[in-house]
Image (cartoon, rainbow, N blue to C red; front, side):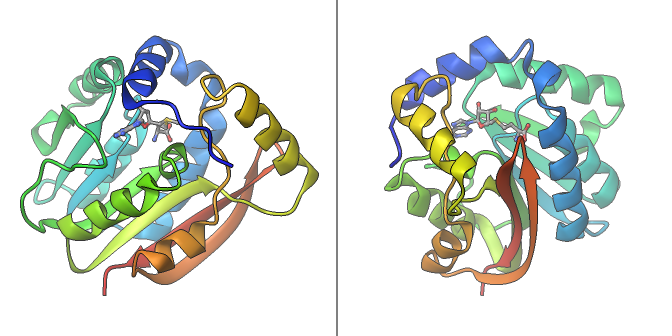
Length: 214
Ligand SMILES: C[S@@+](CC[C@H](N)C(=O)[O-])C[C@H]1O[C@@H](n2cnc3c(N)ncnc32)[C@H](O)[C@@H]1O
């Protein structure tokens, strides 16, 4: 059962975490890297990352799409935006990457313009009622046939998942995300699943899924 924290609460949490987030998120980074390989970005594509955090994946994406492509990112937290912007500036890739503060439930793009979108350890932060909204927003801004790459804690019947959910229920600010049925939420939001990889993080199941907008 998802415990909801407000978007204001989430923003404050991630603002606080932004300065030292990199010191405990190495495992997540390597799973994001694997997911980006699966997403197979092509030179010249326009890509959106939602919840870019400290910005590591943005650089991988900018390399993959090259100078003809473009990477845009939105994140709820101004603290994360500041850390990611510094990383982008020092990478020399700033000309190809645009970042802004924004909310995934209401994407600031009026028309479909992305060949692919990416979310890593972000979709499972949203409440059960918001997940379909976020996925509908992604579908709205993807071009027909556009791909969506998701890396997420996956809800399976394991003891570790039960422990984790117990902590999430009691300390939702500290343990803000929780495992979800990744395939199910994507299919309910009318995506076609293309590929899935099963991995784990701290003993918890993780799914990397690439799906497409019909
Ligand atoms: C668990 S972190 C993951 C960061 C990064 N994707 C990674 O894999 O390291 C979740 C990110 O989602 C952002 N976020 C939380 N709620 C959001 C929302 N409503 N809209 C956009 N971003 C959000 C947070 O600020 C944070 O940067």
